[in-house]
Image (tube, rainbow, N blue to C red; front, side, top):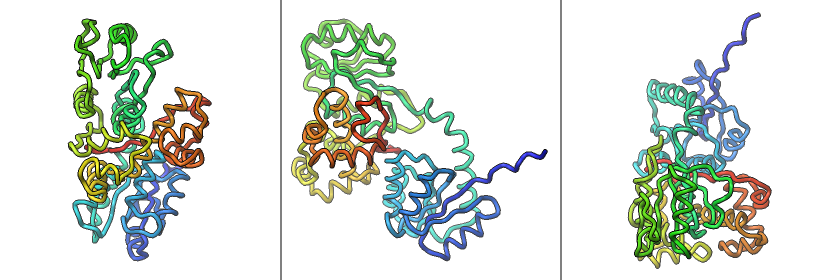
Length: 368
């Protein structure tokens, strides 16, 4: 009995120009199965159904545009290579698409040979990525005793580069796997005793102690990095960039202004607004939003929501507060508002956290 022929890769072409769709079917049809969508909403439904191996995406399409579609794919953690094929020939558009995970950016009119070469390379790479990705990409970072705002901001900002977990300083006896790096906040009582317990619990981990007293590590002599109190967000981020082991995706190198945004958000999770952020940092909200998106690939509004959702997850894990109370504490209007955004960013309802779900949220940036 003959074995069935191998499945041909399935390519989804997303473009609202019938002429472009016809041309791409002719170019790709001899080598691949081709599926098409004329708007972003239809494309998203097809991608959620699975089986698509690669997407050829125009940026200017009906419904949700190409940039927004890339954001939705990342939020929903749909890992499919996306090649941009657009009539927009600007550095900003290309940079924004690449930061959101696009594998390449080609402009119309396109060269058939170049298009086929890029697609073939992407499919070869993605065939082996599933096995290598989890092992090579992710460092493990454990935050101990850190404020919820700082925890939420670091989780959102480093999600493409590290698996971030957190635990109160008094819960070190739980089932915790050994991390690559520990960030330990020494702002509480008995810093020396806390350091000793962390060193005994994770002897092979790198330790960064923040808000360290004048005695450094609380009088304990260990091989660790101590950042004096009050530790700035910029100090901590620079130390993390040096400490986290290299990964497939390079660690982010955010500008001083973007780091200032993250620092401010970490201490004002519940009440920060884009207009207030602009005033605090001396920039117009419009300019600040454009700067943040150009550098991170994520809108400032989406980032604030993601940080608040992560802060809510921490409160759901660490307190017995009702969902309505948690929503108010992190700056959402009510429990329904929190539930909608929690589902959007995690794929789960808030109540699932207390039922044992501990999944990851989407990465902020996939490029430095």
